[in-house]
Image (cartoon, rainbow, N blue to C red; front, side, top):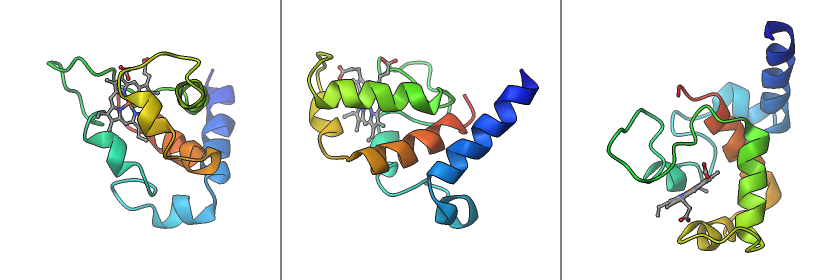
Amino acid sequence: MGRLLLPALALAFLSGGPAQAADAPPNGPPGASSCTGCHAPMKVTDSVIPRIAGRKSADIVTAMREYRSDAWPSSVMGRIAKGFDDQQTEAIAAWFAVQPE
Ligand code: HEC
């Protein structure tokens, strides 16, 4: 497990571009702060909104694509996902994946 996880994390960082690992602001890459208002990165127990911190970035990217194409019915995510292209979504997903669950 440990052997697989480290390269995967390194890849997640690399795919976000070099600026992300070095100068990532505490609020994450551009766009991430528009997610955290609803998907708080810290543990919120009294929320109906699914928590995505600590999820695999590939899973977040897949969900966002499905929402964007309306393949997955949603209340708000379809509209939100349409505001982000693949590159932005991947950077945001990589950031969420390394936030504490
Ligand atoms: C207005 C509040 C709100 C904002 C802002 C928001 N989300 Fe969501 N998110 C939701 C809700 C509510 C759901 C459940 C699906 C639905 O009804 O749209 C959800 C579901 C998800 C899911 C699926 C989780 C699961 O377990 O099914 C992912 C992934 C996700 N959001 C990612 C994001 C990302 C990335 C952003 C920022 C670009 C974002 N969300 C911004 C409210 C929000």
